[in-house]
Amino acid sequence: MARKREFPLAQVYDLLEPGPVVLFSTAHAGRFNVMPMSWHVMMEFVPPLVGCVVGSSNFTFEVLGRTGECALDIRNIEKL
Image (cartoon, rainbow, N blue to C red; front, top):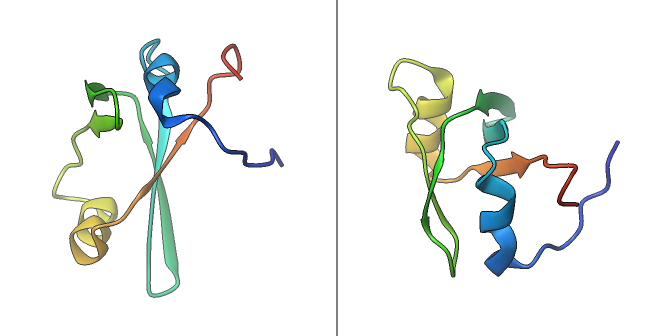
């Protein structure tokens, strides 16, 4: 398993611009969900603001509405 590490927020754009698949994770009441997301857009650079669409017909949308929280796992081996 890969270890997490700090990454400069101002460089998040460099990871997202090439268009990698991002894992969009949510959790609530002990239930976890990971949704692969292939469409996203940088809306601001510093601080980074990422735009995406989560459809209302799935569990990810329901949990995001309840908690207001998610995590993005960005894998771009060329940049790391």
